[in-house]
Amino acid sequence: MKIIAYSYTEPLLETAPAPEFWGQEVDRTYQDLGGRQQLQQLLQDCETEPAKYLLIQRFEELGDTVQEVCSHLAQLESLGIEIIVQAETEPRNRKNLLQILVEIQRSQHSRKIRKGHATNRIKARIPPGKAPYGYRRSKDRYTIDKSTAPTVKDFFEHFLIYGSLRGSVRYLAKKYNKKISVSTGRRWLTNPTYRGDLEYHNGQVISNTHIPIISREEAAQVDRLLRRNRSLPPRTASAPRSLAGLAICAECRSPMTVTKVTPYRKDKEYLYLRPINCPNQPKCSGLDYDEILQLTIAGICRDLPDAVAGLQIPDMNSIKGGIMGAIAFKEQIIDRLPALIENGILDTETADLRAYKLRTEIAEMQSKLAQLPPVNLREIAQTVSLPQFWLDLSESERRFYFREFIDRIEIVRENSQVKLQIIFIF
Image (cartoon, rainbow, N blue to C red):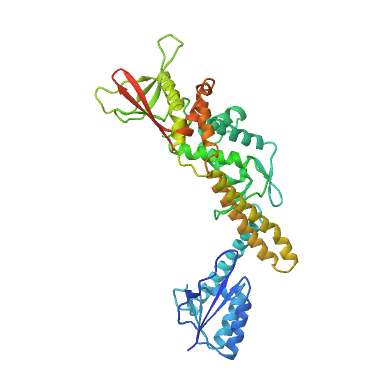
């Protein structure tokens, strides 16, 4: 009793089954990748030495159309070969034969559409649908829309300066009358299209497919700001005061909020830091905001250089150099592919598939490169440790630098004095 197995794999959509997929009882396996050569060989071999059973995963593997599937089924059955379908739950008979044919037709139509989308991905063509705001669709790629791209660029620049998503959304509405939701603004900040890359529905990204609106360095800074803001309480990333979301009362362990007090019929206002949920009785009193701000700046100037000096910082230059070298090597391989096609070593489809995989690997490496911390961390720490650095900064600018280095500020009350314990993020 001879048992054979046949599988058809479309390289653009799926991977071939492993050799052990069919089990040890199979005498011979026929496997096609994108063509039907092995299927024809199977039919020829069965003419001379018929098998008892043929194992397949789905009926649709036996042809590209319903007519081909039916023709091959009739040929196999005329040879007395019993076909066992792994994905079939009911025995094949006259009652469900029509249902099987309809399913084959539906599945092949779906496969044809998916294959078309996969071909577009491999050729780095833009996906179907409307172009993101700031771009226009051309024949096979996105092009800059000169009327809307400056709005998107200004949105990114505002976020890079102030690190506030909600603030950037409000800025866009005020300056350009472009009203978007916060969730839309977040999608803009993380959309690979604005970085010159294409992302498809399967999550894979192909790099350098069109002109970007922001540079790689700006994109890396955007990602760092978004990661930093995730650790902050809700809405504090856009709070107007630099200590918002950072201060904690060491006595009651409650986060502190900034409150504003304006005396009756006077223009002057006073700012205080008060615990949000203090369980003590009497409750912990508020503290003068400006006093805590000056103590925070003094603490950074005093403690930050020692904190950075004690870090075991790896050689970021060598790490970045290694990743950039790997990217350059893969780009060289892509450049060699046209010559391999001309010499007949690779066909066009295989070369396109190889280039697609290389581009997705390059995009992953560029993402890792963007997540690395800045090389000059010690130099930055020396700069922000100078008291003069903080003199002319606005509250929004101070907020930006505080959150680059500070995880939280614990405020300790000792009799009539206040001391700070600054916990850095590293």
